Amino acid sequence: MAAARMPGGATRLTDLAEAGPLRLRLPRTAPGPLEAVLLNSAGGIACGDHFRVEADLAPGADLVLTSTAAEKIYRSDGPTTRLDVALTVADGAALAWLPQETILYDGVRLHRRLDAACAEGATLTVFEAMVFGRAARGEVLTHGAVRDDWRVTRGGRLVYADSFRLDGPLSDHLSRPALAGGARASATLLHLAPDAESRLDAVRDLIEAAGCPDLAVEAGASAWNGFLVLRLLARDIRGLRVAAIRILEGFRARPLPRVWQT
Figure (cartoon, rainbow, N blue to C red):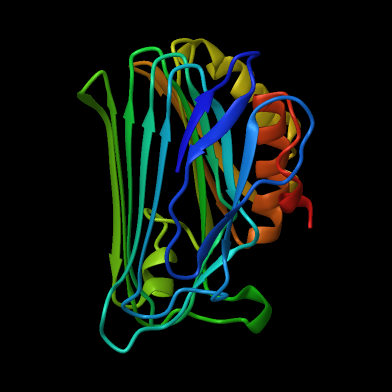
């Protein structure tokens, strides 16, 4: 998809291509950023599937891109599931990539990759959450493979690289104190903007105000080189979602898309 700022200041969709079960919906919203919602009509992603989402923002465009519900990644009998996101944000444009959480089933084999190409004056906010097993079923991930790669460039230069990889008995790995200390849900918030570093103290105040200890959520934030990163770890997704919503709404100074509330 491609979005541009129209005369009068509103952001409009200028190009859209859909394939397979992925569809894009544009609910009517109040004045502000254009809100686009991804819908996976298949209800989940099966082994060996390859999903790709691309968004290209022209100068001055303002877009929030989210998903209708949590994305389920089913077990695999061998092939690796691919989930790729490619974001391009021009000078003066702002993109918030805010999908709901990704739920991993036992036996999952997933490679997820996010690539973002940002201009010097672009603003990018990315939030991704991952849940290891279906909590309602008490699922333990006895085996699987997960790889998650993020690469962000600014002005054509690589400024952020993050890779996460687990292979084998996933729940056992996550129980290690040096890795996740028994957490079964994790999330990362990445914010790149000209003023990103100056917002670190405000984000740490939001973490405290969100009541993370009462929700059994561990959180920490750092800022350097023109971006800000927040990490969240929790025993289950319920506490993490509550903390994330409080932090994201405070950080962005506006409510999250309505689909997050349903």
